[in-house]
Amino acid sequence: MDFAQDRVTTLHALAEPDRIPNAPTARTTVLVPMAAADAGPGSDRVFSALETLDIERVVVALRAPADRVPSIEKRLASRSIPIELLWCNGPRIEGLLRAQDLDGPSGKGRDVWLGLGLAAESQYVAIHDADTASYTEAYVPRLVAPLGTGSERSERSENGDVNEDDGEGGNENRNERGTNGYRFTKGYYARIEGDRLYGRLCRLLYAPLVRTLAESHDASILPYLEAFRYGLAGECAMTGDLAREVRCRRGWGLEVGLLGEVFGVAGSEWVAQVDLGAHDHEHRSVDGVAGLSAMAESVADALLQTVEDRGVQPAYASLPERYREQAMAFVDSYHADAAFNGLAYDATGERRQVRAYADAITPPETDDRLPAWEDAPIAAESVRAAARADLEAIAEGSAIQGAYR
Image 1 (cartoon, rainbow, N blue to C red):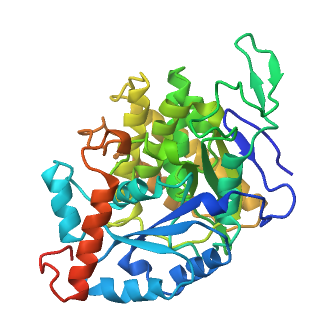
Image 2 (image 1 turned 135 degrees about the horizontal axis):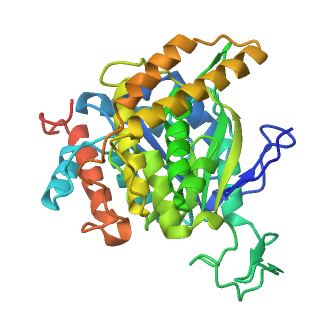
Image 3 (image 1 turned 120 degrees about the vertical axis):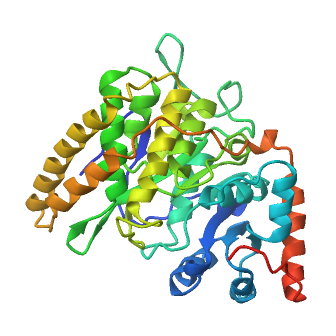
């Protein structure tokens, strides 16, 4: 059984995989980014599981055409838990952002940012997708439990000695809300479904690219990023104060960008990763606008911007080739691992993906990150008011026809 620790504290499933720990769920808002395509049996499973928990509320950050919103709102309203629907591409929301020069490219990251403004009113915030087929009622408690506990943790003094904290004040490292737990947790899991390995973008791009950079630079951000077992997982949780302090990438680079933000604000000692067991959700084709190749460009851009923020200056002329060599070695290791476990493995196809991903490794483009909510030129309550007005307009049949399609 694996119980190894790294730069980031790892909380393993050492006993029951779906054990539900004591957790401050009653003080937690669950933020669920959701597209119109997610509305159906998959999201029903997720919300049914959330109904079994004592949670403060759910904020659904919805991106959908205007004509789909009423049916989705009705579906959510039938639930027995408090749900606040935020239609992220409603015309009044769009106008509010445009008035403050925050419009720019839209995507999952922008939706999560909008939702964070509302969710951060709670003491704790958990974030996860709506399309997870393997979702269980253990996800949120496992993510949130480390935030609300931690009196058993040892603090290291500047000279390296270990001082046991008695949990009764005097700890200068406590977060602003006075708890003694971690400030951020990230989920990880096995992406093995049927007889195949999945998680290709993380296995074939994120992991080998971070390893390549770590071999050439000694910045502390790199061992931190390398310590995450599934750096692109969308499941995470944080304290409400931290949620107001982090900037957000607008698109698919949200997850890795958030890791960098957390590192800058909280430091690695207040971060943990949590074993969520197995994971099954919708798979993407390699090509096309919504495919992995397009996502690779956003992920690589976010990763490289993250390390540049911490002083790393990659040698971009040689980086794609050095990455390719590293990733090909990873493919050999994955091939051996799959064979050892009797899993099917398309080594030729994975090498083809590596070559495609190498083309995505270029210097970061213009920084269009959305500001931390504590620095934002708009208030979260303004977002709430605009969202409610958009929903009321749809109910009255007067939504602007030019809303997102």
